[in-house]
Structures are given as C-alpha cells and as structure tokens.
Image 1 (cartoon, one colour):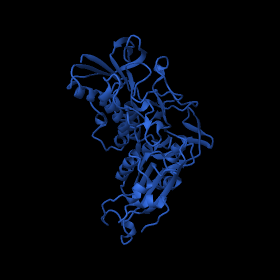
Image 2 (cartoon, helix red, strand yellow):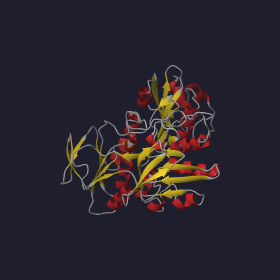
Image 3 (tube, one colour):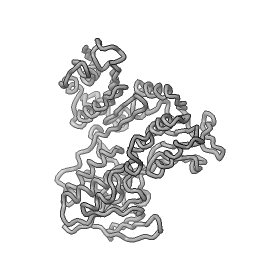
Length: 450
C-alpha cells in the first residue's frame, strides 16, 4: 500500500489505531507522535496506583513503544504537534526537550490529541501546592505527597473523578476535605437517592464534605479560599474537569463551541485525509441520536477500530454506528455504574424523558438482611416510546456487571417492556426470581411484582 499514516497521541485511540493498521494492512508506515516523555500512561488506572494496588507506576500503561515496534510501527515521544498544514499534508512537530521543530509528511493523519485537566481560573491556581488529577507526572507527585508524613490535610476540588483522590488520601491516613460547587457529589450522573449513599459512605470514612461551595482562590500561606470561608490545606488536588487539547488546530480544523474537533459520520474532519478520535471529539450518542461528549477508553477504542476498517475507502461503506457510553464510580464499599444518558443529558439532547428509581434487596426475603444488600437501579427512558436511554446500578455488593446489561439494552434501543420481560438466570444465592433489572423496568411501567 505504501502509505504513511501519522497518529498524534499515544493514548487509547492512538494505540488502538496503530495496532489495527499494522494488523490489517501491508506496507504501511505507521508512526505515533506523543507529547509526554512516558508513553501511554493510563490516567484511569491512577486510582489503583495511588492505592498501591498495581505492580508499579511504569506498568500502568496501554503499551510500551517496543510493543508497537515489534509490529513494524514507530513511537516517538517528547514530540508535540503544534501546527497543521493540510494543503501540503504536513504536521509540525516540536521536540519538547530541545524546542526544535520539523515538518512531518503524511498520507493519512489521525488526530488523537486528548484532553488536559482543567486548571481553575482563580488566583493562585499555579501555586506549587496545587496539583492536578491527570497524567503520569501528576500521578507521581500525588503519590509522593501521600507518602509524605508532613502532608496531613488535603483538599480535593471536584466531586466527579476527584472522589478517587479522596479515597486514596483516606487510605493513606490523610485528613480529607472534598469541595464541590454542586449540592450533591456526582450530581451529573446520579439522582439524590444514589448521591445520598455516596455522601454517607464518605462521611463514614471521615471525609469533610463542603458542597454547594465555590473555590475563589488559593493563597501563599496554604489557604483554599471559598465563598463559604477559608480551608487550610497542605496540598490541593484539583479534579474539576477537562478541556480539549485543540488550541493548535484552531486555524485549520473545525472545532465546536467548546473547542472539540468536529467530525462527520465517518470520523473525518473538514480537511481531506485528516481524521479524529478519542476524548477530543464528540461522537454520536446512540440514545441521544446526536453528538455528545463521551470521554471513555472503551469509546475511543471502538472509534479507532471503526476508522481503521474504513480508512482507505473512497467513501466508507457504513457510518460510525455510535456509542452508549459508560462509567464506573466508586468509593469505599459503594460501587456504581452509569450507562447511556442520565436525566440531565437526556434533557440536553431535547428528549421528552423521565427517570424511575427502584431500590430493593438483591436476594429473596428469606435471606437475612446482613447478607442481602440493597440494590439501586435508575432507568431513564423516552416517555413517548419507552425506549431506554440510560441507566445506573449501585450497591455495596458488586453488581457492576448489570451496568453492561443496561448498556446492551440501550445500544439496541430496547424498551422498558423488553427489559421487564427479559429472562435471566435465577439462584437465591445471587438474586431473585425476578431479577432486579426486571423489577426496575416493571416499576417504571407501574407494575408491581414480588
């Protein structure tokens, strides 16, 4: 084929695209350019690393450069893409160590620039005791801080992925405070029935929750300033969101109002032979039937798999089918999975949606309560058609696999009636004659089974 494919970014989509290309096609020149010194660190594995549940930080990665080189590809780190010239089919790469630049030619260019952690736009956000919750370097610094006996009081800003930092701090014996502007933690994902359980679990573990509280600045004498007073902190970890790493593309690639790369139904950008994948795009959401942010390693890999299959077709034989989206959120003994669209996202998509909450024991009533935990099921559905748009499962028992059942139902556009009638296995060692997902769907339909 004798084509040169250049990939910007070595995380999940870049890595997956490179592997797929080298597996499927002959005579391709495949090169990944990665800004970081360390290639392919998995930020989603940071929680386990900070909790000392991995084999070491350098192993928390998708792949090593040697893995790709064995297949004939190349990975060049410390190499930041800084400009794009689609007319000449060239991308400008800067060596982050020397500052030198070079023009790299391509036949096909796959953009996977990813996202950066959001730095709060407040005074003192760049002080040396204010850390960010993403990437290899920050993971290393946070880990060192957790092992530093002089650091006792840690404030985490952001009650989304920030809860992972809180739990790591609790396990390290630190005094943890969580600050968030919302009235409840994880409010973008769950209803109050769910968030109440998370909040109680955190308080039981000694976490000081400062909710409905906005950070207004950081001071040199280690004070976190908020609209509800100051908080003393030896260390601050900010996990307040992400921003697309796309500033360098503004003059050449169409971006949406939030700075994410716009693609068509085939993951093509507005420039010929330039494609985009991963957290820096808004892919098609199956339940919303529109483009929405779905930051996910799984989503990125599905995008890469699709793109490589159709990369060399003049007109792709089928569009990208879209994604459901899912995320695991846990703290202490509480485990939850959210799939598809929560109520807020459904409303954002302009759908006439409703959400039903079902709470019940997982096993029959003859099982003692201390061995029969509660399960929480949330179903968001189209009120007109009963199509299931989203769902969440939560328990102190691990029922996270039920989140995959919901994802399958959402992806195949099943209805409440479909889920209410679906047959599952039964054993009183694990569940009830009517599975809790059956019961949740029946409850949403106004039916009451026992």
